[in-house]
Image (cartoon, rainbow over all chains, first blue to last red; front, top):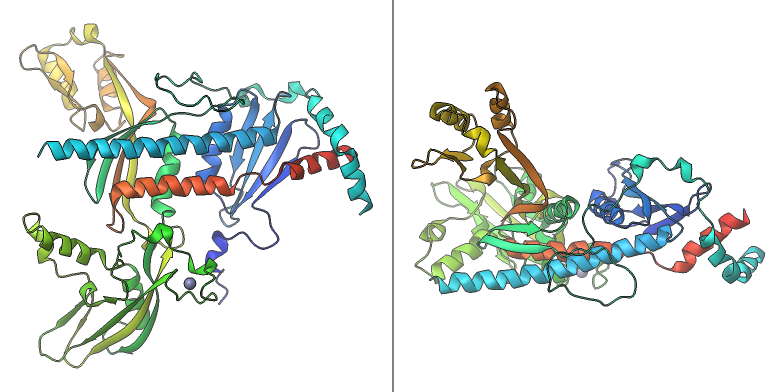
Amino acid sequence: MNAPDRYERFVVPEGTKKVSYERDTKIVNAASFTIEREDHTIGNILRMQLHRDPNVLFAGYKLPHPLQYKILVRIHTTSQSSPSQAYRQGIEDLDKELQYLKKAFEEEKIRYEEKQRLSY
Amino acid sequence: MDQRRSVSDLFNPLRPESNRNPPLYPSLIPKTLISLPKRGQNPSGAQKPPAMETTVSYQRFPKVRIREMKDEYCKFELRETDASMANALRRVMIAEVPTVAIDLVEIEVNSSVLNDEFIAHRLGLIPLTSDNAMRMRFSRDCDSCDGDGQCEFCSVEFHLNVCCDSDQTLDVTSADLRSAEASVIPVDLAVKALAMESSSTSYEAAEQRGIIIVKLRRGQELRLRAIARKGIGKDHAKWSPAATVTFMYEPDIHINEDLMETLSLDEKRAWIESSPTKVFDLDPNTGQVVVVDPEAYTYDDEVIKKAEAMGKPGLVEINAKEDSFIFTVESTGAIKASQLVLNAIDVLRQKLDAVRLQDAEENDFSELKAHLG
Ligand SMILES: [Zn+2]
């Protein structure tokens, strides 16, 4: 009867942004990003990718509650960069890595199949 | 309205300044939280791709080596990336790569011993061939059928009509399901058909009778209509294409040979035996301890404790390589294991695409508001 809607966990509610940005009021170049309907999968790769950026002083994420389907990502950068720039860069690099990985896997699959075929 | 206009007027002059500000409280940044990239930013190999952008990039270039690949099983090495990427891929393979499964059941007649819900649940758990799932639509955002999720783009219809009229118990199985679409059928039937075709291989599969849904005795009947839909494991495990997906860190094992040579043959044997899995062995010719199967090591620390108990600490050093992973992927048969990996990469890219910042304006806007108080 009072069961929550089945796709409440995947669909961003109307009137809510997928990603929202909130600047820190006390520290320059620090901000929080709220990402709706995402979890550790995105949170952790994004955090680890941000750690590779030397302009990022701090990057962390949390899943505030298992029944609130959102994550918070907090980024603090040097004055050489900005949280949104670092965020953008992080997503871009991850996307390119996956693009590269897909090609690598496909090529390896072809190579493997060829090898199997020859050994028969 | 008023505020908005003043904001856009100020927009350009203020924006660069906000970036020029030095950090206000550098001393407040806890040193332990400062994270620095661990490895060199330059990827090691030579044939490295693109010098495409003017901006710096911290992208990695992972390497893959497939060790074993069958339709429903794949074992491969993933290198030169980190655990977060390996784990994201594992999580996506289990919970977010879509498949097709029965989701809606209309029972017309059910005089079997199982109740309607029980049968509907069992039908949902039958894996269906889902090679087209990536191209299908989710019923919830299909605009060809107004939300009821019953059109060719988002669903596949099944019928089942079985009646027992003999004294022998009749098994109702996945083979009794009649699909409206040839490309979406129970996995066990597809495997069986394939095995019959190439009669040489696995005639074990050809012997299979299908997945039992319910058993009927004389006079009992089951007649129903079922709708299969696209879904993901996060919604319900019946949609998960993965039977198991695991990865392990590749171990790096170093034996201190000098210290090892101070052990007698019996001591060596005892030390080798202390490992619950067969990682080490004794070379029968030289009497040396050798690593026979590093990946059998389960990070149990038993050999390290044994060495300490023998008064030989540092006899062996074992570390997990932080950028090398060995993946084992087993599929339910809904899609091939190798396809599962490729689909997971696609799904993860789609997810990343969805969390891109929409427009720079929005961010600058809030930055400005902060300035204006
Ligand atoms: Zn539809």
